[in-house]
Image 1 (cartoon, rainbow, N blue to C red):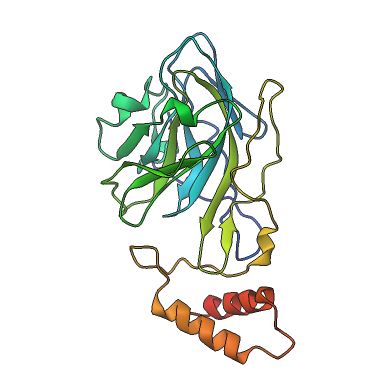
Image 2 (cartoon, helix red, strand yellow):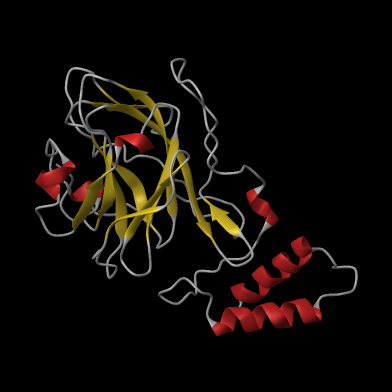
Length: 266
């Protein structure tokens, strides 16, 4: 049981660029009774003797349109169904232990929990998927094997939201690759970037997200309307910044950095 009033599941202190979303791992305490965390709380594995008791949560709240990225590490053919994903407004530190056996229906039947099953075609060992909640309160998912799909809608955006994942059925272990939030001129990412680790029995590793230097962009486009479009203030700042840039700043990188410094003053 977490201490009363100790609901501070916040981002850990860090030093990084403006493109940083903050460190992201699985919550170290709020885990199912059959889950073992390793590799710095980035790898979560459910024991093979059951198809349930596989709940895990993110270590901090996720931003709207922040895409949490997972890799399916191990699966088991003798179970049906696969991982379930969603969000909750209940902080992991506020939960009593042991956790319920399953996200659906144990948690989704209570207020502040939204989750949906992921089709088995998304969840083959070695495949990557990402899911997020939109400004319209809908949960979307995409995978290296399939196209983007809406899982459900009606998520309450008025409170902080933690990612909620149930390592269920055929899915035995998952690796947290981090998260990213795509903006007009840049993509912000969680930090530190997890190492690209793959368990020995994973075959056919597909890359879903292109890798690159997250410091290439220094701006934060969190000022968006519900549809995810930057507000006029952001666009105006962009125009002013680019117009004021010196002639030698001809590259898009320099322009992006200028925009970032301008937006930091808004």
